[in-house]
Length: 259
Image (cartoon, rainbow, N blue to C red; front, side, top):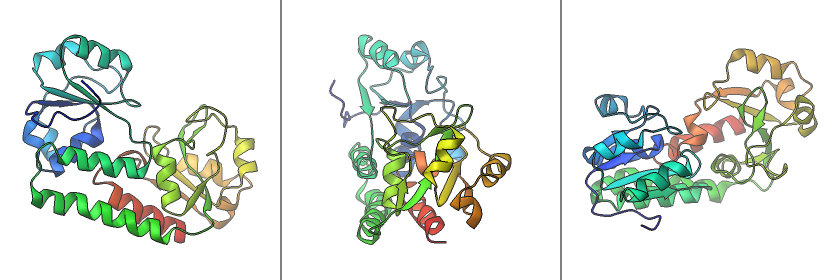
């Protein structure tokens, strides 16, 4: 199967947390028969669904036992071997890969095409499209230098060819490690962070759960963001989950950049 949705799918296994949430928001949650351990939203709806393991190590056997007619995966969050094994077993697998905010909007539209009502499209998809258009129109000519790590020990930064970097730029930021070698998430040293001179630092809660101690460590460095007190701990889903969260992500991050 090509990497596109099966529009008649009624038994879906989602291996992507943000896709799971999107399907529920679109009124398609009753089609989901299996999810990963990391699919935690909406919490009141996913609690009773069968779990097939983590995003990196789902059980192919358990997925097949659920008899899905569509598995939704992601090129970055899931491993190729899982996709290959499922396809070899005759299962349709839709591999998603949003690398920009516009890609995330398009994916939400495509998920809606699985059978969402016109009312769901109006209440879920349209607000996301509207806030993205507004952000594009209001994007400043000069972006605010921003550092957003995803890991520590070693420090790893959001690189340029990523959804998170696209979101930061749309919100008025300029990712200081957008051009840093061939890695999508470059490893950086503290000296490089200092040299990059970010004016804002965002410390997300996932995939690494940054906390107050990490903020204090960076605040002790000679950084514009440290001097101005613009080091923020944020909900990690804002920079990594596409779908309905695009709307609050843009609103929240733009506010942080304008403070």
